[in-house]
Length: 314
Figure 1: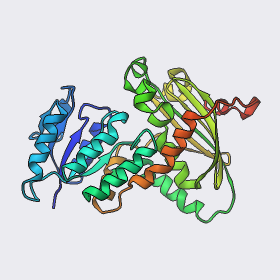
Figure 2: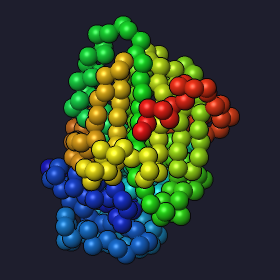
Figure 3: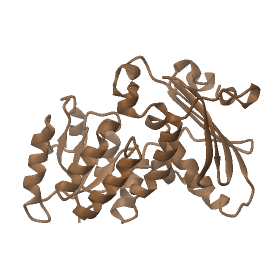
Figure 4: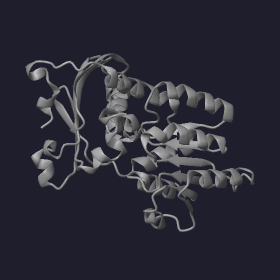
């Protein structure tokens, strides 16, 4: 039987992937909300969705649906709003009797995870997050391979996501609202590394600027050097010539796993997992949120020579 969805942040960058996932899994979108009215994308997926520019009216509508039959109420609220609003909108979803599917990062600060876990218990709802890289076939295969290995791995991670001046002007450039670069574009990569190589033993931050972050992490089974950037100049020449706007590279013991492809349908796989009762929740999100919070608060420590993570990012 199909489920009823509502969507918050319908005009956002990632909303179309959630819309596609809702449609691909055979479900309905009853309502959508965004203060910006540039939401014509809805027509590509659902023509009868009620649209609200005010959260209060959206909330009231979902509350009304909650008091109707099981087939009429909202079963899931998908949240694609700015990072600093995620926990508030998750709470809204739980209050109207729905489960929440929230974009990464689930929260900016770790202690908010405890509040959401308590809200889950009080409202008998579930909170799910979209750590979609865990669903990449190449990463699933790698995890199986690593389960049979006792060797400590040497990891280099580079993620260059080209962004123009708008990025720093928007909420994404405001660390209080986004959590900074490492949280906004890096959290799902950190989650992937923790999922593959185990818990954090120690970490350092080597560079922390508006457009570039880098550092080193010692995990249970790996030593990691990482570099994140939104600077267009950091995009490798081969990627630029190929017309690409992002570069993702994971090197394990000198062997590169370039995974710049295969990202477009991952949200559908996330939704399939949630609907099958196998979604990732609050505790799945906790390790990467705690790691990035520590990186945000740590003193920058500049290493010498080739220990600097920037050398492998170009």
